[in-house]
Amino acid sequence: MLRLTVRTSASLLLIIASASCSDYSAVSRAPDPPDTTFEDGLWSISGTLPGIVRLAAPQLQAGGEITPATAITTSSAALTGFNGVAFDAAGTLWMTSQSDSALLAFSRNALAASGARVASTVISSVGGSLDAPSALAFDASHRLWVANTNNGTIVRFDSAQLAASGRPTPSVILSGVGHPTGLAFDAAGGLWFSQGGGHRVARYGAAQLDTSGFKLPEIVLTSEGPDIGNPIGLAFDAAGNLSIANSGQANVIAIHANHLTATASVHADVVISSSSTAPSLPLGLTFDDHGNLWVVYAEGVLTQYAHSALATSGAPVPAVRIDIKGHPFLRSAAFWPKPAGLPLN
Image (cartoon, rainbow, N blue to C red):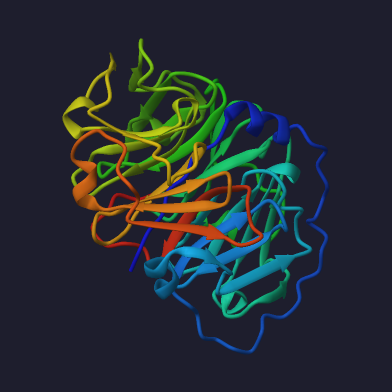
């Protein structure tokens, strides 16, 4: 099984996020298709020809210009802008719809084949609970965390709040975060977020995630030089090293686990620069079962860097490059089944 990564501009995220929002919560739900076969692969959200797309494992191995194996459209949200995607433990696909400030869920049955689908669950904003959401991640207790790019909050929805469509008030609201654009959990249950338009990533410890409020992160990593610049996507590998889609520097960097333990000004341990065969706007990252890093680019490109190429800095040629035909404007990607042995993200 394979995995992917990408990067994008924070200023562009904010421009898109300011678009007017529509209320889709009243859309009635259509039945899922009868086919209950759920396909494995890598899933992403396209903001151009808006929809959900899947690349099958053979496509991920072959590379080239590819028409997605599955393409799903929906009337439940606009899906324009840069949208995050994540799977829960049951294989339900959850996604942010940045342009209309909503969360959507699609059941496994709804993902079985291409076509038009209505979301099984739509969570709409109440009092700014969702404000241009751009990233999401599940914790070990199956609670969903969402980064709101516009109003500078990270919010938590518990499982019961996600069981049906509505406008629930988040169980936890962390405020004063700036413009969060990426989320990832580490193996200890700490929640890391990237600061779009800035030069830092930060971590809330597990104990800080139980209650709402304005809280200083437990760890803040900044960069005096060009190492961290407009960070977007975040992903941890099996060894606890943090990879960052560094859209401001047109590269992907890694900070090793031993440099993630305390607030500091840091330098990247590994810098993967764009080569002539990779585009320049990485937004999202994810690891596969073999430790290969997949990068999602705003231009609608996915690249895979082999695990062996991640040990030292350079401009390696991607082991795989995929141009998703007709579907640029990508922000993130997620594999199902989830890769084994990795922290939650």
